[in-house]
Length: 175
Image (tube, rainbow, N blue to C red; front, side):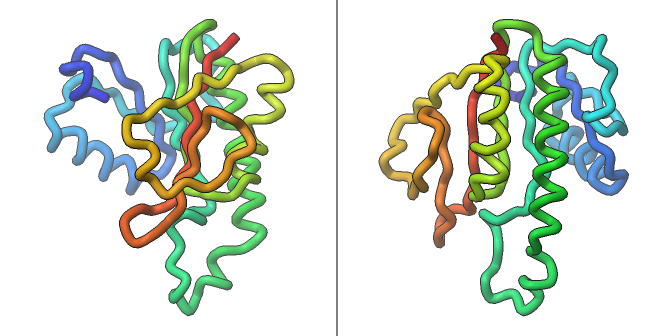
């Protein structure tokens, strides 16, 4: 994002995990991004006086799109409890993001999950309440991607294969 804006955008990154903060700061510095401020903060607890023109919500998830089915510990690590915990976080994060996004501005919601529970089902209540609308994603050469079916037109879910990890992405506009 910093590169796309030639370091002109003011970027705020929220991260709760100290190790991930250090990695993020390292990558930001390595890429020469000078317009990024990293907050050691759970984004769910941001004060409502914050407001943003654009938000990228790369939500924590079960990672179902990145699973190694040959991992002998898969049944221990990929559990219903993990999915339920992820869903609770995603709902809270999306609610906060919508609150602090300025009206008529856009955000991207993404996960590395291919599960409907972590993607379309998270968005549906906000769509029904008319808080957000889908901005259809248009990609050149989209027909070359291994896509999974989605229940919300305009969103994309990429199937994992030998070339791609699975992920979901939706572009949203606050009403």
